[in-house]
Length: 94
Image (cartoon, rainbow, N blue to C red; front, side, top):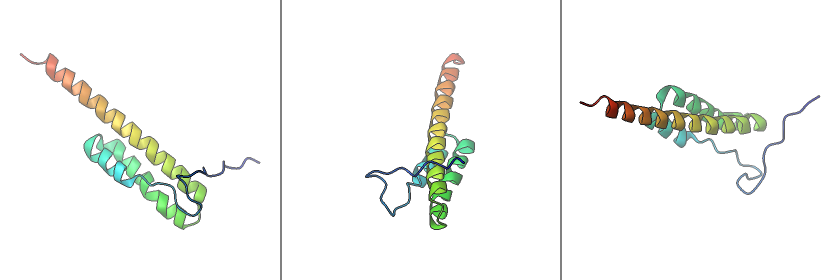
């Protein structure tokens, strides 16, 4: 039977503290970069503390990791859209 990996340890993860929820970063990435994809990061960010409070430590760490991943995806897509829009604007000028 395969068990999930243990939660990460180290100075950034206290023994009794929940993992980072990245909620502020999720909201900023959603507003500034890409709203549809950013909503996914907000959903995962909001799950971290509730899973931790319910005693699901592995689920909280997984939700934290997913939130971070989706924040990165949101920012990359937002930057890509901005760059493409910039070049489109330059090429369509008179």
